Length: 301
Image 1: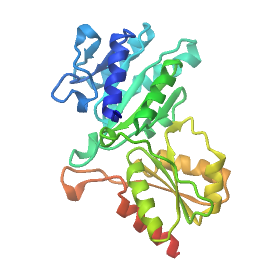
Image 2 (image 1 turned 30 degrees about the vertical axis):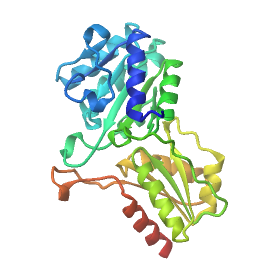
Image 3 (image 1 turned 135 degrees about the horizontal axis):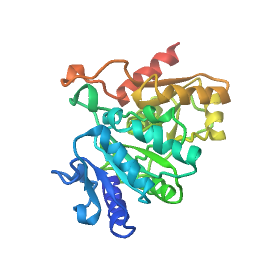
Image 4 (image 1 turned 90 degrees about the vertical axis):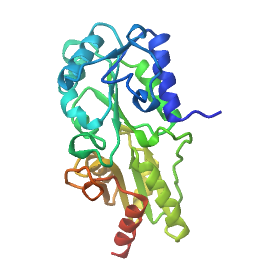
């Protein structure tokens, strides 16, 4: 029976602690729900370390554990909390190998969600990590992708920022690229926007608008495939979707794609506004309907 992303993460954490004898760190790990069902029901004697609610200190503790020989999994329950958790990781762990020849490998689980949770906790914030050297960033949305990222981490000695999204936890299926010869539009999609973008692509195809769709798993390093460039050059317009802010990593990757191709790639993500706690104040990633409206608007031009 196929495993969900949730079950895959839970299995990885269990083996990391019980078989490999490493530790997992975070706040409220054993609270109701066990972080969306992604953690096995283990305790401190098993390697599940409960940190205090002092967010800034948590990152420093995990960096110290990695320097001492652990390969910690660090669980950040809301990606917005990276504003408090990541300073020591970015300014010490990510630079340690280059400056002092001392690796500091950490597997950081940054977990995103949005909708009614206010201006601090919500959405993805992988752009925070992207500008710093010494870090690798992935956004796995399928079981095989998550396994692939973890396996690569275990062969590496770098800091890995794994941008998760709770909306992917129930997913069992791999997401396949759509790459046809004569597209009208090309989509590149990051994180939770992959599900809505692929939905929009299939609906638009029924409306005789041919859409190519490309998954982006690795945000850093961002290795551009030749098939991506060909798809952009053959399209009338291309987009890159993200659930971080539009001026963040999506803009950077769009620029890299444009520099290799001959056509414009438009970044599209969260609006430049703070989210509130009510539906009319939410700042949500683009839905399939948003994406279809955007495509039709540009094709009319």
